[in-house]
Length: 88
Image 1 (tube, rainbow, N blue to C red):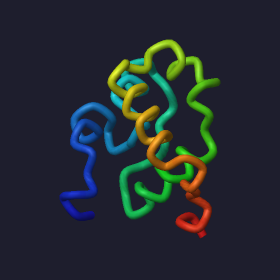
Image 2: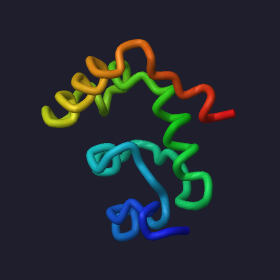
Image 3: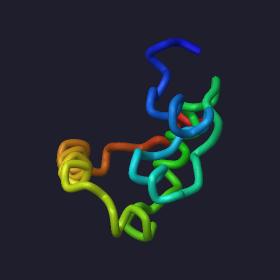
């Protein structure tokens, strides 16, 4: 694994697992998966298949800065953002 692929908070808090965000870890949400060669693909798949608006942890705890970031990304990308080709 390359240094730039590591989410450092997972090394100290999560025993080799990765989460969608630090709040998800704090709230005892399920990990996305184990850190390894599949980490980026696991995160892409989670992002594509997981509805954060329906997730109770996300809905209740998402930080304003994260909500703003997601809203800005949606406004810039519009409907052109599709992860399916990345995951094949």
